[in-house]
Amino acid sequence: MKKTVGVGLAHSKIIMMGEHAVVYGYPALALPLPRVTAVCQITACDLPVVIDPLDPIDTALSVALTVLDIAEPRIAYAVNSAIPEQRGMGSSAAVAIAVIRAVFDYYNQPLSDELLEDLVNKAEQVAHGNPSGLDAKTCLSDMPICYQRGQGFSPCPVSLKAHLIIADTGVYGNTSQAVQQVAKQGEAALPMLSYLGGLAQSFLERLPERHLPSLGKLMTQAHRKLAALGVSCPEADQLVEAALSAGAFGAKMSGGGLGGCVIALTDTYKAAQAIAQNLREKGAVNTWIENL
Image (cartoon, rainbow, N blue to C red; front, side, top):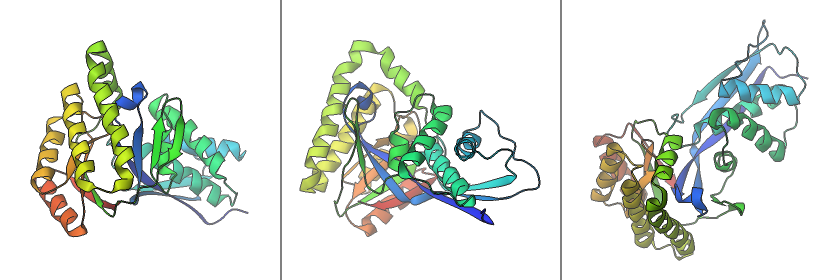
């Protein structure tokens, strides 16, 4: 029995540590952002839905309808997402999750976590070609996820009693171009990637200590090295400096780079608000504050 309205909700994610080095076998840590969400609503329509096979949202719709064996579905969908596109926040994965959940909800069908993840990864292949699955995994998780090539995914509980500020540079990121730029550097990039990998590993090892100044220092060191690799951008560099000048323990670009977001670490919510305000004054088009 179909419902009048089908609803699906999903949250976004952000990379804390490990960008680019993860491609070369080092660990990466991704955080779910439960306060930054996408919602999809499915309603009845007089005409069959027309699906564009090259559109990621339509692809998510299609994979859900296919597994449910729904032919010529007379439905319409509406997506309301607070997740900016191409900023390293998992926008396409989160929207795909929301769409698939909404379809199953509309048709009143059960949806296991395993099936949902499989369908989301199929939809993500249209958006990203050959995704690692980290975006989908983290957008489906209620706790941070550690990923390492050859070892897969593992939950990584984080309890720092701290706050993370995420700031949107307003510049589209370009992960594939950034990865290619690093690859073109060949052996010259390997020492920097090894250093970045070591920083990510140290960050993970020091998480239980909850010493925010030490963790922040590792974040800032990572940004400096990512900038040296050529995968940052002037807007991100400016926001990192703005966060540090406002009292953040550490700050760095997040994600593939050449745009996207900057993250900053602090202890109290009051401090996080002050840092976020400074970041907006220095050019951030939006900011979010998450508990860690």
